Image (cartoon, rainbow, N blue to C red; front, side, top):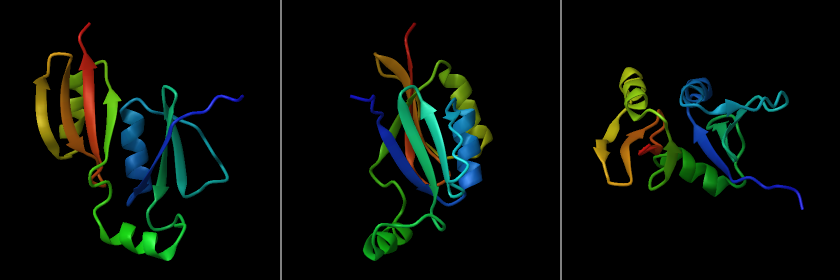
Length: 129
């Protein structure tokens, strides 16, 4: 049986801005030349597929309407491990992105939460060495 990856798709308002940010967070680009409105990235064995909110199709009209009206990602959290939480936090501040939970030690790791340019919440975690 072929290997299968967990794939997460996020619809984003500015494909290039989001793509550049996730690259800076350590995601790796998987070029797909035939997919102009998508950017494929990997982090370990997980794939992240960014799609242009306005150019990539929806599977039905109701989902399209709801997606365009509602805040993207409400209730969704993408957890990203990092080797340097302070550097990731600095990047978040440099990009002018909202932090929803300041860095803190939770016992098993140091974490912080922030929103990406489309309001998707990310939790960054650095495990103790």
